[in-house]
Amino acid sequence: MRRFRDTDEVDYCIVGVGSAGGVLLQRLSRAGFQVVGIEAGPFWDTERDWVSDEKGSHQLYWTDLRITGGEHPLSLGENNSGKGVGGGSVHWAAFAPRFHPSDFRVYTEDGVGADWPISYDDLKPYYELLEREIPIAGPAYFPWGDPHGYPYGPHPMGGVGNSLIRGCTKLGIRVSAGGPVAILSGSRGDRPHCIYRGFCIQGCKVGAKASTLITHVPNALESGGEVRDCSMASRIELGPDRRVKGVHYFDREGREHFQKAKAVIVSGYAIETPRLLLNSACPGFSAGLANSSGTLGRYLMAQAGNVILGRFDHLVRLYKAPPAHAMTEEFYETDPKRGFARGFAIQTVGPLPIAFAKQMMVAKGAWGWGMRRVMMDYNHWSSIAVLGEILPWADNRVELASETDQFGIPVAKVTFNLHDNDKKLIEFGKNKVMEVMWAAGAEDVVQEDRYAHLVGASRMGSDPETSVVDRFGRTHDIANLFVCDGSVLPTQGSANPGLTIQALAARTADYLISQGDRIFNSNSRDMTPPPVRYNLSPPGTFWKGMPRMT
Ligand SMILES: Cc1cc2nc3c(=O)[nH]c(=O)nc-3n(C[C@H](O)[C@H](O)[C@H](O)COP(=O)(O)OP(=O)(O)OC[C@H]3O[C@@H](n4cnc5c(N)ncnc54)[C@H](O)[C@@H]3O)c2cc1C
Ligand code: SF4
Image (cartoon, rainbow, N blue to C red; front, top):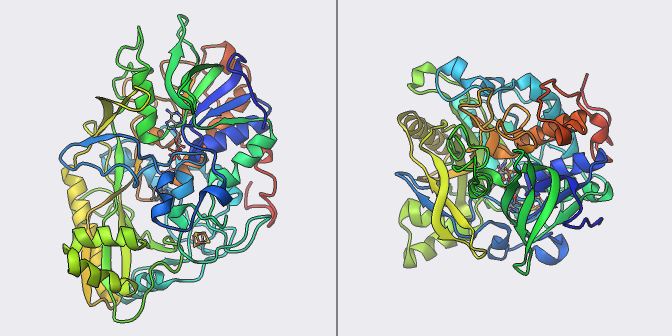
Protein backbone atom coordinates (compact mmCIF):
# COMPACT_ATOMS: atom_id res chain seq x y z
CA MET A 1 0.00 0.00 0.00
CA ARG A 2 1.21 3.46 -0.84
CA ARG A 3 1.97 5.59 2.25
CA PHE A 4 1.63 9.35 2.31
CA ARG A 5 3.27 11.50 4.97
CA ASP A 6 1.18 13.79 7.18
CA THR A 7 3.05 16.69 5.64
CA ASP A 8 2.12 15.67 2.08
CA GLU A 9 -0.86 17.74 1.10
CA VAL A 10 -3.03 14.97 -0.38
CA ASP A 11 -5.97 15.76 -2.66
CA TYR A 12 -8.65 14.16 -0.48
CA CYS A 13 -8.65 13.03 3.13
CA ILE A 14 -11.66 10.78 3.78
CA VAL A 15 -12.67 10.28 7.43
CA GLY A 16 -14.10 6.77 7.78
CA VAL A 17 -13.56 3.87 5.37
CA GLY A 18 -16.96 2.24 5.75
CA SER A 19 -19.85 1.70 3.34
CA ALA A 20 -19.61 5.12 1.71
CA GLY A 21 -15.94 5.82 2.47
CA GLY A 22 -14.80 2.55 0.87
CA VAL A 23 -16.56 3.35 -2.41
CA LEU A 24 -15.26 6.94 -2.43
CA LEU A 25 -11.69 5.85 -1.73
CA GLN A 26 -11.84 3.36 -4.60
CA ARG A 27 -13.34 5.78 -7.13
CA LEU A 28 -11.13 8.77 -6.33
CA SER A 29 -7.91 6.69 -6.22
CA ARG A 30 -8.78 4.97 -9.50
CA ALA A 31 -9.36 8.38 -11.08
CA GLY A 32 -5.79 9.33 -10.12
CA PHE A 33 -6.28 11.52 -7.05
CA GLN A 34 -4.02 11.24 -4.01
CA VAL A 35 -6.35 9.96 -1.30
CA VAL A 36 -5.91 8.93 2.34
CA GLY A 37 -8.68 7.22 4.30
CA ILE A 38 -8.42 7.82 8.05
CA GLU A 39 -10.19 4.91 9.77
CA ALA A 40 -10.76 4.60 13.53
CA GLY A 41 -10.84 0.81 13.54
CA PRO A 42 -8.49 -1.91 12.28
CA PHE A 43 -7.78 -3.07 8.75
CA TRP A 44 -9.36 -6.50 9.13
CA ASP A 45 -7.56 -9.63 8.07
CA THR A 46 -10.60 -11.82 7.52
CA GLU A 47 -8.61 -15.03 8.03
CA ARG A 48 -6.89 -13.97 11.24
CA ASP A 49 -9.38 -11.60 12.90
CA TRP A 50 -12.80 -13.04 12.15
CA VAL A 51 -14.47 -16.04 13.71
CA SER A 52 -17.72 -17.82 12.98
CA ASP A 53 -18.87 -17.22 16.53
CA GLU A 54 -21.47 -14.81 17.83
CA LYS A 55 -19.67 -13.54 20.92
CA GLY A 56 -16.27 -13.49 19.26
CA SER A 57 -17.53 -11.02 16.65
CA HIS A 58 -18.50 -8.14 18.92
CA GLN A 59 -15.22 -6.42 18.06
CA LEU A 60 -16.71 -5.55 14.67
CA TYR A 61 -19.02 -2.95 16.23
CA TRP A 62 -18.48 0.60 17.41
CA THR A 63 -18.87 -0.07 21.14
CA ASP A 64 -17.03 3.07 22.34
CA LEU A 65 -19.02 5.26 24.71
CA ARG A 66 -22.11 6.97 23.29
CA ILE A 67 -24.88 8.48 25.41
CA THR A 68 -28.51 7.73 24.59
CA GLY A 69 -31.68 9.47 25.76
CA GLY A 70 -35.12 10.80 24.87
CA GLU A 71 -38.55 9.26 25.38
CA HIS A 72 -37.69 6.26 23.20
CA PRO A 73 -33.92 5.91 23.60
CA LEU A 74 -32.11 3.99 20.88
CA SER A 75 -29.99 1.12 22.04
CA LEU A 76 -26.47 1.97 20.89
CA GLY A 77 -23.46 -0.33 20.60
CA GLU A 78 -23.73 -3.54 18.63
CA ASN A 79 -26.93 -2.60 16.81
CA ASN A 80 -25.55 0.45 15.00
CA SER A 81 -22.28 1.00 13.27
CA GLY A 82 -19.05 -0.80 12.58
CA LYS A 83 -15.52 0.15 13.50
CA GLY A 84 -12.82 -0.96 11.11
CA VAL A 85 -12.24 -0.96 7.37
CA GLY A 86 -15.58 -1.72 5.71
CA GLY A 87 -17.51 -0.07 8.58
CA GLY A 88 -21.11 -1.22 8.84
CA SER A 89 -20.85 -3.18 5.58
CA VAL A 90 -18.74 -5.74 7.47
CA HIS A 91 -21.58 -6.66 9.85
CA TRP A 92 -24.64 -5.71 7.79
CA ALA A 93 -27.13 -8.47 7.06
CA ALA A 94 -26.76 -7.37 3.40
CA PHE A 95 -30.39 -6.85 2.38
CA ALA A 96 -29.91 -4.50 -0.56
CA PRO A 97 -33.17 -3.13 -1.97
CA ARG A 98 -33.34 0.23 -3.75
CA PHE A 99 -35.34 3.14 -2.36
CA HIS A 100 -38.62 3.78 -4.18
CA PRO A 101 -39.14 6.84 -6.45
CA SER A 102 -41.63 8.16 -3.84
CA ASP A 103 -38.88 8.26 -1.18
CA PHE A 104 -37.26 11.19 -2.96
CA ARG A 105 -40.42 13.36 -2.79
CA VAL A 106 -42.03 12.47 0.52
CA TYR A 107 -43.08 16.04 1.33
CA THR A 108 -44.61 16.62 -2.09
CA GLU A 109 -46.52 13.33 -2.05
CA ASP A 110 -47.50 13.05 1.61
CA GLY A 111 -47.00 16.49 3.19
CA VAL A 112 -44.59 15.08 5.80
CA GLY A 113 -40.81 14.72 6.11
CA ALA A 114 -38.80 16.31 3.33
CA ASP A 115 -38.11 16.13 -0.40
CA TRP A 116 -34.63 15.15 -1.53
CA PRO A 117 -32.73 17.60 -3.74
CA ILE A 118 -32.28 14.72 -6.22
CA SER A 119 -34.76 12.32 -7.79
CA TYR A 120 -34.80 8.54 -8.08
CA ASP A 121 -33.75 8.93 -11.73
CA ASP A 122 -30.57 10.76 -10.65
CA LEU A 123 -29.58 7.75 -8.53
CA LYS A 124 -30.90 4.96 -10.75
CA PRO A 125 -27.72 4.55 -12.87
CA TYR A 126 -25.72 4.21 -9.65
CA TYR A 127 -28.11 1.62 -8.23
CA GLU A 128 -27.65 -0.38 -11.44
CA LEU A 129 -23.89 0.03 -11.28
CA LEU A 130 -23.50 -0.91 -7.60
CA GLU A 131 -25.85 -3.88 -8.00
CA ARG A 132 -23.22 -5.19 -10.47
CA GLU A 133 -20.16 -4.17 -8.50
CA ILE A 134 -21.23 -5.67 -5.18
CA PRO A 135 -23.05 -7.78 -6.76
CA ILE A 136 -26.66 -8.32 -5.62
CA ALA A 137 -28.53 -11.63 -5.83
CA GLY A 138 -32.29 -11.55 -6.13
CA PRO A 139 -35.29 -12.38 -8.27
CA ALA A 140 -35.41 -11.77 -12.02
CA TYR A 141 -38.37 -9.48 -11.36
CA PHE A 142 -38.69 -7.40 -8.18
CA PRO A 143 -42.12 -5.79 -8.49
CA TRP A 144 -42.02 -2.84 -6.08
CA GLY A 145 -40.86 0.77 -6.51
CA ASP A 146 -39.22 0.91 -9.93
CA PRO A 147 -39.56 -2.79 -10.90
CA HIS A 148 -36.27 -4.39 -11.96
CA GLY A 149 -34.29 -7.64 -11.86
CA TYR A 150 -30.95 -8.61 -10.31
CA PRO A 151 -27.67 -9.72 -11.91
CA TYR A 152 -27.25 -12.82 -9.71
CA GLY A 153 -30.02 -15.37 -9.19
CA PRO A 154 -31.98 -15.71 -5.92
CA HIS A 155 -30.82 -17.81 -2.96
CA PRO A 156 -32.62 -20.97 -1.85
CA MET A 157 -34.99 -20.57 1.10
CA GLY A 158 -34.14 -21.26 4.74
CA GLY A 159 -36.69 -22.11 7.42
CA VAL A 160 -37.43 -18.44 8.27
CA GLY A 161 -37.94 -17.54 4.61
CA ASN A 162 -40.33 -20.45 4.27
CA SER A 163 -42.42 -19.13 7.19
CA LEU A 164 -42.56 -15.66 5.62
CA ILE A 165 -43.55 -17.07 2.25
CA ARG A 166 -46.14 -19.42 3.72
CA GLY A 167 -47.73 -16.67 5.82
CA CYS A 168 -47.75 -14.11 3.02
CA THR A 169 -49.07 -16.57 0.47
CA LYS A 170 -51.96 -17.53 2.78
CA LEU A 171 -52.82 -13.82 3.17
CA GLY A 172 -52.43 -13.02 -0.53
CA ILE A 173 -49.37 -10.78 0.02
CA ARG A 174 -46.73 -10.81 -2.74
CA VAL A 175 -43.30 -11.79 -1.44
CA SER A 176 -39.76 -11.84 -2.87
CA ALA A 177 -37.83 -15.08 -2.21
CA GLY A 178 -34.03 -15.22 -2.19
CA GLY A 179 -33.08 -11.53 -2.12
CA PRO A 180 -32.29 -8.81 -2.97
CA VAL A 181 -29.18 -9.40 -0.91
CA ALA A 182 -25.48 -8.57 -1.30
CA ILE A 183 -24.46 -12.21 -0.96
CA LEU A 184 -23.09 -14.34 -3.79
CA SER A 185 -25.47 -17.02 -5.02
CA GLY A 186 -22.72 -18.22 -7.40
CA SER A 187 -18.97 -17.81 -7.05
CA ARG A 188 -17.30 -14.78 -8.62
CA GLY A 189 -13.58 -14.33 -9.17
CA ASP A 190 -11.84 -15.32 -5.95
CA ARG A 191 -15.05 -15.01 -3.89
CA PRO A 192 -16.92 -18.28 -3.20
CA HIS A 193 -20.70 -18.51 -3.11
CA CYS A 194 -22.66 -18.58 0.14
CA ILE A 195 -22.57 -21.78 2.17
CA TYR A 196 -25.67 -20.94 4.22
CA ARG A 197 -24.44 -21.20 7.75
CA GLY A 198 -25.81 -17.87 8.97
CA PHE A 199 -22.85 -15.88 10.33
CA CYS A 200 -23.45 -12.89 8.03
CA ILE A 201 -23.64 -10.20 10.72
CA GLN A 202 -20.52 -11.72 12.25
CA GLY A 203 -18.54 -10.64 9.18
CA CYS A 204 -18.76 -13.69 6.85
CA LYS A 205 -15.32 -15.22 7.06
CA VAL A 206 -16.15 -17.08 3.84
CA GLY A 207 -16.19 -13.90 1.71
CA ALA A 208 -19.57 -14.60 0.10
CA LYS A 209 -21.18 -11.56 1.70
CA ALA A 210 -20.13 -8.22 0.24
CA SER A 211 -18.47 -5.49 2.28
CA THR A 212 -16.45 -2.59 0.93
CA LEU A 213 -13.48 -4.27 2.66
CA ILE A 214 -13.56 -6.93 -0.06
CA THR A 215 -15.47 -5.27 -2.92
CA HIS A 216 -13.89 -1.79 -3.20
CA VAL A 217 -10.96 -1.25 -0.83
CA PRO A 218 -8.62 -3.77 -2.57
CA ASN A 219 -8.96 -1.88 -5.84
CA ALA A 220 -8.47 1.44 -4.00
CA LEU A 221 -5.09 0.19 -2.74
CA GLU A 222 -4.12 -1.15 -6.18
CA SER A 223 -4.94 2.31 -7.55
CA GLY A 224 -2.65 4.16 -5.11
CA GLY A 225 -5.04 5.00 -2.25
CA GLU A 226 -3.97 4.67 1.38
CA VAL A 227 -5.95 3.41 4.35
CA ARG A 228 -4.58 4.61 7.68
CA ASP A 229 -6.24 2.29 10.15
CA CYS A 230 -6.59 2.58 13.96
CA SER A 231 -6.57 6.35 13.46
CA MET A 232 -9.25 8.40 15.16
CA ALA A 233 -10.04 11.80 13.62
CA SER A 234 -10.64 14.37 16.34
CA ARG A 235 -11.05 17.68 14.50
CA ILE A 236 -11.10 19.25 11.07
CA GLU A 237 -8.98 22.36 10.73
CA LEU A 238 -10.44 25.48 9.13
CA GLY A 239 -8.16 28.17 7.70
CA PRO A 240 -8.68 31.96 7.79
CA ASP A 241 -9.86 31.74 4.15
CA ARG A 242 -12.86 29.59 5.29
CA ARG A 243 -11.41 26.50 3.58
CA VAL A 244 -10.46 23.31 5.43
CA LYS A 245 -6.76 22.48 5.62
CA GLY A 246 -6.76 18.89 6.87
CA VAL A 247 -7.65 16.54 9.70
CA HIS A 248 -6.26 16.12 13.22
CA TYR A 249 -6.19 12.48 14.33
CA PHE A 250 -4.79 10.14 16.98
CA ASP A 251 -2.82 7.09 15.85
CA ARG A 252 -2.91 3.62 17.45
CA GLU A 253 -0.40 4.72 20.12
CA GLY A 254 -2.46 7.80 20.99
CA ARG A 255 -0.04 10.21 19.30
CA GLU A 256 -1.60 13.24 17.67
CA HIS A 257 -1.08 13.98 13.94
CA PHE A 258 -2.34 16.41 11.34
CA GLN A 259 -2.95 15.16 7.79
CA LYS A 260 -2.84 18.02 5.30
CA ALA A 261 -5.41 17.83 2.51
CA LYS A 262 -6.78 20.00 -0.30
CA ALA A 263 -10.30 18.81 0.53
CA VAL A 264 -11.92 16.69 3.25
CA ILE A 265 -14.82 14.23 3.01
CA VAL A 266 -16.47 13.03 6.23
CA SER A 267 -17.90 9.50 5.93
CA GLY A 268 -18.16 8.54 9.60
CA TYR A 269 -21.82 7.36 9.96
CA ALA A 270 -24.96 9.13 11.17
CA ILE A 271 -23.59 9.53 14.71
CA GLU A 272 -19.84 10.03 14.25
CA THR A 273 -20.09 12.46 11.31
CA PRO A 274 -22.10 15.10 13.20
CA ARG A 275 -19.97 14.38 16.28
CA LEU A 276 -16.75 15.21 14.38
CA LEU A 277 -18.23 18.35 12.81
CA LEU A 278 -19.59 19.52 16.17
CA ASN A 279 -16.19 18.85 17.75
CA SER A 280 -14.59 20.94 14.98
CA ALA A 281 -16.36 24.13 16.12
CA CYS A 282 -14.08 27.16 15.70
CA PRO A 283 -14.33 30.95 15.41
CA GLY A 284 -16.95 31.65 12.72
CA PHE A 285 -18.58 28.27 13.35
CA SER A 286 -19.05 28.24 17.09
CA ALA A 287 -22.03 25.82 16.87
CA GLY A 288 -20.10 23.28 14.81
CA LEU A 289 -18.28 23.27 11.50
CA ALA A 290 -20.62 23.81 8.51
CA ASN A 291 -23.52 24.38 10.90
CA SER A 292 -24.70 27.87 9.96
CA SER A 293 -28.18 26.35 9.46
CA GLY A 294 -28.31 24.91 12.99
CA THR A 295 -29.50 21.62 11.45
CA LEU A 296 -26.26 19.67 11.96
CA GLY A 297 -27.07 16.71 14.23
CA ARG A 298 -30.83 17.16 13.75
CA TYR A 299 -33.29 14.99 11.76
CA LEU A 300 -31.58 11.78 12.88
CA MET A 301 -33.65 8.78 11.82
CA ALA A 302 -33.85 5.12 12.74
CA GLN A 303 -36.15 2.60 11.10
CA ALA A 304 -38.67 0.72 13.21
CA GLY A 305 -37.33 -2.83 13.41
CA ASN A 306 -39.77 -4.75 15.63
CA VAL A 307 -38.94 -8.45 15.58
CA ILE A 308 -41.84 -10.90 15.68
CA LEU A 309 -40.90 -14.39 16.84
CA GLY A 310 -43.11 -17.39 16.21
CA ARG A 311 -42.82 -20.95 17.50
CA PHE A 312 -43.55 -23.78 15.12
CA ASP A 313 -44.19 -27.42 15.76
CA HIS A 314 -41.69 -28.38 13.06
CA LEU A 315 -37.96 -27.53 13.02
CA VAL A 316 -37.17 -24.09 11.54
CA ARG A 317 -33.43 -23.76 12.32
CA LEU A 318 -33.32 -19.99 11.99
CA TYR A 319 -29.51 -19.91 11.85
CA LYS A 320 -29.41 -22.08 8.74
CA ALA A 321 -29.32 -19.44 5.98
CA PRO A 322 -28.36 -15.78 5.70
CA PRO A 323 -30.64 -13.81 8.07
CA ALA A 324 -31.56 -11.73 5.01
CA HIS A 325 -33.22 -13.83 2.33
CA ALA A 326 -36.91 -13.03 1.82
CA MET A 327 -39.02 -9.87 2.06
CA THR A 328 -42.10 -8.04 0.93
CA GLU A 329 -42.53 -4.34 0.14
CA GLU A 330 -46.29 -4.66 -0.34
CA PHE A 331 -46.95 -2.10 2.45
CA TYR A 332 -44.17 0.34 1.50
CA GLU A 333 -46.24 3.20 0.08
CA THR A 334 -48.70 5.49 1.86
CA ASP A 335 -52.23 4.11 2.09
CA PRO A 336 -54.64 6.75 3.45
CA LYS A 337 -56.93 4.00 4.79
CA ARG A 338 -54.27 3.06 7.35
CA GLY A 339 -54.37 6.47 9.05
CA PHE A 340 -50.68 7.34 8.81
CA ALA A 341 -48.19 8.47 6.17
CA ARG A 342 -45.56 6.22 4.54
CA GLY A 343 -45.15 2.50 5.20
CA PHE A 344 -42.99 -0.49 6.00
CA ALA A 345 -41.35 -3.61 4.61
CA ILE A 346 -41.42 -7.10 6.13
CA GLN A 347 -38.15 -9.05 6.16
CA THR A 348 -36.58 -12.24 7.47
CA VAL A 349 -34.08 -11.99 10.34
CA GLY A 350 -32.08 -14.85 11.83
CA PRO A 351 -30.88 -14.20 15.37
CA LEU A 352 -28.10 -16.47 16.61
CA PRO A 353 -28.46 -17.81 20.19
CA ILE A 354 -27.19 -14.76 22.15
CA ALA A 355 -29.41 -12.34 20.21
CA PHE A 356 -32.30 -14.82 20.47
CA ALA A 357 -31.86 -15.09 24.26
CA LYS A 358 -31.97 -11.29 24.59
CA GLN A 359 -35.12 -11.16 22.46
CA MET A 360 -36.79 -13.86 24.53
CA MET A 361 -35.89 -12.05 27.73
CA VAL A 362 -37.67 -8.92 26.44
CA ALA A 363 -40.52 -10.54 24.52
CA LYS A 364 -41.38 -13.43 26.84
CA GLY A 365 -39.77 -12.44 30.13
CA ALA A 366 -37.65 -15.59 29.87
CA TRP A 367 -35.17 -15.98 32.76
CA GLY A 368 -33.48 -18.77 34.71
CA TRP A 369 -35.04 -22.15 33.98
CA GLY A 370 -37.58 -20.48 31.71
CA MET A 371 -34.71 -19.15 29.60
CA ARG A 372 -33.07 -22.59 29.49
CA ARG A 373 -36.30 -24.15 28.25
CA VAL A 374 -36.70 -21.50 25.55
CA MET A 375 -33.08 -21.88 24.45
CA MET A 376 -33.46 -25.65 24.13
CA ASP A 377 -36.39 -24.87 21.85
CA TYR A 378 -34.33 -22.44 19.67
CA ASN A 379 -34.57 -24.57 16.53
CA HIS A 380 -38.38 -24.36 16.52
CA TRP A 381 -38.56 -20.55 16.36
CA SER A 382 -38.81 -18.28 13.34
CA SER A 383 -38.27 -14.50 13.30
CA ILE A 384 -39.63 -11.90 10.92
CA ALA A 385 -39.16 -8.14 11.28
CA VAL A 386 -40.91 -4.93 10.41
CA LEU A 387 -38.73 -2.35 8.69
CA GLY A 388 -40.76 0.84 9.07
CA GLU A 389 -40.18 4.41 7.99
CA ILE A 390 -39.83 6.79 10.92
CA LEU A 391 -40.01 10.39 9.74
CA PRO A 392 -37.26 13.01 10.17
CA TRP A 393 -37.93 15.21 13.21
CA ALA A 394 -35.79 18.13 14.36
CA ASP A 395 -35.80 16.98 17.99
CA ASN A 396 -34.23 13.62 17.12
CA ARG A 397 -30.62 14.60 17.18
CA VAL A 398 -26.93 14.09 17.88
CA GLU A 399 -25.26 16.56 20.25
CA LEU A 400 -22.04 16.53 22.22
CA ALA A 401 -22.08 15.04 25.72
CA SER A 402 -19.94 16.25 28.59
CA GLU A 403 -18.33 12.76 28.74
CA THR A 404 -15.19 12.10 26.68
CA ASP A 405 -13.67 9.02 25.05
CA GLN A 406 -10.24 7.42 25.49
CA PHE A 407 -8.66 10.29 23.50
CA GLY A 408 -10.40 13.00 25.51
CA ILE A 409 -12.81 13.78 22.63
CA PRO A 410 -16.41 14.61 23.68
CA VAL A 411 -18.70 11.71 22.77
CA ALA A 412 -22.08 11.83 21.04
CA LYS A 413 -25.36 12.19 22.92
CA VAL A 414 -28.29 10.83 20.94
CA THR A 415 -31.88 11.88 21.69
CA PHE A 416 -34.75 9.96 20.11
CA ASN A 417 -38.53 10.39 20.39
CA LEU A 418 -41.32 8.74 18.44
CA HIS A 419 -44.03 11.02 17.07
CA ASP A 420 -47.68 10.25 16.43
CA ASN A 421 -47.26 9.08 12.82
CA ASP A 422 -44.34 6.84 13.82
CA LYS A 423 -46.31 5.20 16.63
CA LYS A 424 -49.30 4.45 14.40
CA LEU A 425 -47.05 3.03 11.68
CA ILE A 426 -45.21 0.77 14.15
CA GLU A 427 -48.45 -0.51 15.68
CA PHE A 428 -49.90 -1.34 12.28
CA GLY A 429 -46.68 -2.93 10.99
CA LYS A 430 -46.20 -5.03 14.10
CA ASN A 431 -49.76 -6.37 13.95
CA LYS A 432 -49.44 -7.14 10.25
CA VAL A 433 -46.28 -9.21 10.81
CA MET A 434 -47.95 -11.04 13.70
CA GLU A 435 -50.83 -11.85 11.33
CA VAL A 436 -48.30 -13.23 8.82
CA MET A 437 -46.65 -15.35 11.53
CA TRP A 438 -49.97 -16.81 12.68
CA ALA A 439 -50.97 -17.45 9.05
CA ALA A 440 -47.68 -19.32 8.57
CA GLY A 441 -48.83 -21.79 11.24
CA ALA A 442 -47.08 -20.51 14.38
CA GLU A 443 -48.47 -21.81 17.69
CA ASP A 444 -47.02 -19.00 19.82
CA VAL A 445 -46.15 -15.45 18.69
CA VAL A 446 -44.25 -12.77 20.68
CA GLN A 447 -42.56 -9.53 19.70
CA GLU A 448 -39.67 -7.25 20.67
CA ASP A 449 -39.59 -3.47 20.06
CA ARG A 450 -36.43 -2.58 18.18
CA TYR A 451 -34.91 0.03 15.89
CA ALA A 452 -32.46 -0.37 13.03
CA HIS A 453 -30.31 1.59 10.59
CA LEU A 454 -29.52 5.11 11.79
CA VAL A 455 -29.31 7.76 9.07
CA GLY A 456 -29.74 11.53 8.76
CA ALA A 457 -28.24 14.24 11.03
CA SER A 458 -26.24 16.04 8.27
CA ARG A 459 -28.98 16.14 5.73
CA MET A 460 -28.78 17.21 2.11
CA GLY A 461 -31.07 19.83 0.65
CA SER A 462 -31.28 22.75 -1.73
CA ASP A 463 -31.84 25.34 1.01
CA PRO A 464 -28.70 26.22 3.04
CA GLU A 465 -30.97 27.36 5.89
CA THR A 466 -32.53 23.93 6.41
CA SER A 467 -29.79 21.50 5.42
CA VAL A 468 -26.08 20.86 5.85
CA VAL A 469 -24.96 19.69 2.39
CA ASP A 470 -26.03 20.27 -1.21
CA ARG A 471 -27.11 17.57 -3.64
CA PHE A 472 -23.52 16.46 -4.27
CA GLY A 473 -22.61 16.27 -0.58
CA ARG A 474 -20.72 19.57 -0.44
CA THR A 475 -21.36 21.51 2.77
CA HIS A 476 -23.26 24.71 2.05
CA ASP A 477 -20.82 26.64 4.22
CA ILE A 478 -17.36 25.43 3.16
CA ALA A 479 -16.43 24.81 -0.47
CA ASN A 480 -13.82 22.09 0.11
CA LEU A 481 -15.63 20.16 2.87
CA PHE A 482 -17.96 17.30 1.94
CA VAL A 483 -20.10 14.77 3.80
CA CYS A 484 -20.79 11.42 2.19
CA ASP A 485 -22.48 8.64 4.19
CA GLY A 486 -25.88 7.75 5.59
CA SER A 487 -26.01 11.01 7.52
CA VAL A 488 -26.94 12.98 4.37
CA LEU A 489 -30.26 11.16 3.83
CA PRO A 490 -33.23 13.57 4.17
CA THR A 491 -35.72 10.67 4.57
CA GLN A 492 -35.14 6.94 4.78
CA GLY A 493 -38.01 5.02 3.18
CA SER A 494 -38.50 1.50 4.43
CA ALA A 495 -35.70 -0.04 2.40
CA ASN A 496 -32.43 -0.94 4.11
CA PRO A 497 -30.12 2.03 3.43
CA GLY A 498 -26.76 0.39 2.56
CA LEU A 499 -27.14 0.19 -1.22
CA THR A 500 -28.43 3.78 -1.39
CA ILE A 501 -25.48 4.98 0.71
CA GLN A 502 -22.99 3.31 -1.63
CA ALA A 503 -24.81 4.55 -4.73
CA LEU A 504 -24.69 8.12 -3.36
CA ALA A 505 -20.96 7.70 -2.71
CA ALA A 506 -20.35 6.67 -6.32
CA ARG A 507 -22.33 9.71 -7.48
CA THR A 508 -20.44 12.10 -5.19
CA ALA A 509 -17.18 10.61 -6.50
CA ASP A 510 -18.25 11.20 -10.10
CA TYR A 511 -19.04 14.81 -9.22
CA LEU A 512 -15.64 15.36 -7.58
CA ILE A 513 -13.86 13.74 -10.51
CA SER A 514 -15.71 15.87 -13.05
CA GLN A 515 -14.85 19.01 -11.06
CA GLY A 516 -11.14 18.14 -11.08
CA ASP A 517 -8.90 20.81 -9.54
CA ARG A 518 -11.77 23.30 -9.18
CA ILE A 519 -12.62 21.79 -5.78
CA PHE A 520 -9.08 22.62 -4.61
CA ASN A 521 -8.80 26.12 -6.03
CA SER A 522 -12.18 27.75 -6.13
CA ASN A 523 -15.18 28.52 -3.92
CA SER A 524 -17.64 28.66 -6.80
CA ARG A 525 -20.16 25.84 -7.16
CA ASP A 526 -20.79 24.20 -10.49
CA MET A 527 -24.03 22.24 -10.06
CA THR A 528 -23.85 20.44 -13.42
CA PRO A 529 -24.64 16.74 -12.89
CA PRO A 530 -21.58 14.58 -13.65
CA PRO A 531 -21.52 11.85 -16.30
CA VAL A 532 -21.72 8.30 -14.89
CA ARG A 533 -18.22 6.80 -15.06
CA TYR A 534 -18.75 3.09 -15.70
CA ASN A 535 -15.02 2.66 -16.39
CA LEU A 536 -14.21 3.31 -12.70
CA SER A 537 -15.95 0.15 -11.47
CA PRO A 538 -13.61 -2.34 -9.76
CA PRO A 539 -12.20 -4.85 -12.29
CA GLY A 540 -14.40 -7.89 -12.77
CA THR A 541 -17.67 -5.98 -12.36
CA PHE A 542 -19.01 -6.93 -15.76
CA TRP A 543 -17.93 -10.57 -15.81
CA LYS A 544 -21.47 -11.75 -16.19
CA GLY A 545 -22.22 -9.53 -19.17
CA MET A 546 -23.04 -5.87 -19.49
CA PRO A 547 -25.81 -4.51 -17.29
CA ARG A 548 -29.01 -3.04 -18.66
CA MET A 549 -27.71 0.51 -18.94
CA THR A 550 -28.14 3.22 -21.52
C1 LIG B 1 -26.62 -5.52 12.70
C2 LIG B 1 -26.80 -4.65 11.51
C3 LIG B 1 -27.35 -5.15 10.34
C4 LIG B 1 -27.52 -4.32 9.23
N1 LIG B 1 -28.06 -4.85 8.11
C5 LIG B 1 -28.24 -4.08 7.03
C6 LIG B 1 -28.79 -4.63 5.83
O1 LIG B 1 -29.16 -5.82 5.79
N2 LIG B 1 -28.89 -3.82 4.77
C7 LIG B 1 -28.53 -2.50 4.81
O2 LIG B 1 -28.66 -1.82 3.79
N3 LIG B 1 -28.02 -1.96 5.92
C8 LIG B 1 -27.86 -2.71 7.03
N4 LIG B 1 -27.32 -2.17 8.16
C9 LIG B 1 -26.99 -0.73 8.15
C10 LIG B 1 -25.70 -0.43 7.40
O3 LIG B 1 -24.66 -1.23 7.93
C11 LIG B 1 -25.37 1.07 7.56
O4 LIG B 1 -26.49 1.82 7.14
C12 LIG B 1 -24.19 1.51 6.70
O5 LIG B 1 -23.06 0.70 6.90
C13 LIG B 1 -23.83 2.95 7.04
O6 LIG B 1 -22.83 3.38 6.16
P1 LIG B 1 -21.97 4.68 6.47
O7 LIG B 1 -21.03 4.84 5.34
O8 LIG B 1 -22.91 5.79 6.79
O9 LIG B 1 -21.19 4.36 7.81
P2 LIG B 1 -20.26 3.11 8.21
O10 LIG B 1 -20.35 2.01 7.22
O11 LIG B 1 -20.57 2.79 9.62
O12 LIG B 1 -18.78 3.70 8.12
C14 LIG B 1 -18.30 4.68 9.00
C15 LIG B 1 -16.82 4.42 9.23
O13 LIG B 1 -16.25 5.60 9.77
C16 LIG B 1 -15.35 5.25 10.81
N5 LIG B 1 -15.26 6.44 11.68
C17 LIG B 1 -16.25 7.06 12.33
N6 LIG B 1 -15.80 8.13 12.99
C18 LIG B 1 -14.47 8.19 12.75
C19 LIG B 1 -13.44 9.09 13.16
N7 LIG B 1 -13.69 10.12 13.96
N8 LIG B 1 -12.17 8.85 12.72
C20 LIG B 1 -11.90 7.81 11.91
N9 LIG B 1 -12.85 6.93 11.49
C21 LIG B 1 -14.12 7.13 11.91
C22 LIG B 1 -15.99 4.04 11.46
O14 LIG B 1 -15.04 3.28 12.17
C23 LIG B 1 -16.57 3.32 10.26
O15 LIG B 1 -15.67 2.38 9.70
C24 LIG B 1 -27.14 -2.96 9.28
C25 LIG B 1 -26.58 -2.44 10.45
C26 LIG B 1 -26.44 -3.28 11.56
C27 LIG B 1 -25.87 -2.72 12.81
S1 SF4 C 1 -24.63 -17.56 5.30
FE1 SF4 C 1 -23.44 -17.13 3.46
S2 SF4 C 1 -23.11 -14.91 3.49
FE2 SF4 C 1 -23.76 -15.51 5.55
S3 SF4 C 1 -21.87 -15.89 6.68
FE3 SF4 C 1 -22.46 -17.86 5.82
S4 SF4 C 1 -21.40 -17.95 3.81
FE4 SF4 C 1 -21.34 -15.83 4.50
